[in-house]
Amino acid sequence: FTVLAFESSADDTAVAIVNSERQILSNVVRKQHALHEGYGGIHPKIAIEAHQRNMPLAVQQALQEARTSVNDIDGIAFTRGPGIGGCLSVGSNAAKSLAAALGKPLVGVHHMQAHALTPLLTCSTEEAPVFPFLTLLVSGGHTLLLVATSRSEFKILGTTLDESIGRTFDKISRLLELKWSNRGPGAALEEFALQTTQQDLESVPALPRPMPKRLAFSFSALHSAVERFVYNQGGIGNIAMSTRRGLAMGFQNSAIAQLEEKLGLGMDWCARENLNIRHVVVSGGVASNQLLRTRLSTFLNNWGDHPICLVYPPVALCTDNAAMIAWAAMYRFLDNDFDDYTIDLRPEWSLENLQLH
Ligand code: ATP
Ligand code: FE
Image 1 (cartoon, protein in one colour):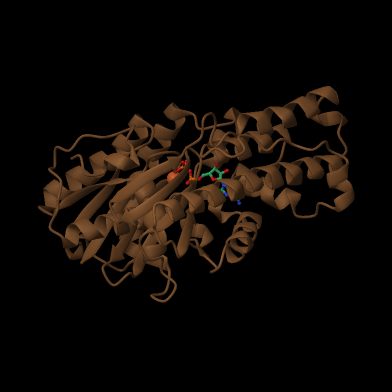
Image 2 (cartoon, rainbow, N blue to C red; image 1 turned 135 degrees about the vertical axis):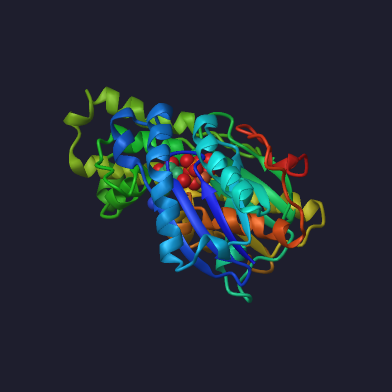
């Protein structure tokens, strides 16, 4: 079964073709980072217009790269939500029109479910996570700790009380005046912090690790601590490059320490519920961060009596892509569980309400 999928929930325009043998035949992502660099976040109107320009070219390229004709496609998938309404509508209108014209089945996908299930597409059979597993979704719009008991059943253990971890990375990156270019603000911050020395780290104050012992995330105290330091120094222009590096690294350390603490609390919760957890999936854009992967892997390897495996998608499939949308839809296509061509969007949609059509 071959699925063509559309993703346009935020700033990336993506089209992919994936088959039920877990082969990614093509995976086209057109990024918009450069367009939004001056705004410090996604500008909805600019994002919608860019999706409108990019989508036809992305479909064409996906079919070419897969060396496939549209007649060989068995089903059409798209991101139904959550996301920016106007952005979602570009992918959904393309998907609905194409499915209706071809008379093919259609499935609308939850974007965060797709992030969570990506390792089931990309891991080898031996390494693939086994249900129930814990899932840490760390992205531009979300910071979620979940238990996945099946492909479509998720329980939310914790979410952020203020801003998402990805958005905090973006804002600190902007505060440090890093160049995003095409890799985006989070990746630019990670790269900038790579050469930090112990001395650089000692030149910045200790940064807060908020909300101890609670299954909830918070990044605004950490964010404002960094901002306050920069402000007190009279602005970023007055801060030496080495100290800026220390800030970037100190910020990453503190954000990752918070993730470790919440993972630990999540493991405790699962133990109390007698859930036998063998795997933790970390996914979403921030999961491409190498320091985060290494630190969380080590943390879980030393967990309790038996080590827990950390699994994550390859970097290219951590940030937004349509291959993950195709894969999340695949299960429903194979179950003959389709949506109507008139299906609406869900810009706000909880992962606990997947079954509500
Ligand atoms: P959501 O999935 O919640 O709807 P989104 O789709 O906009 O949000 P993703 O594409 O999954 O988010 O992830 C983008 C986020 O990942 C951005 O905030 C970006 O800065 C962050 N990010 C990307 N690469 C890295 C990295 N190497 N280190 C830290 N953060 C990163
Ligand atoms: Fe995403």
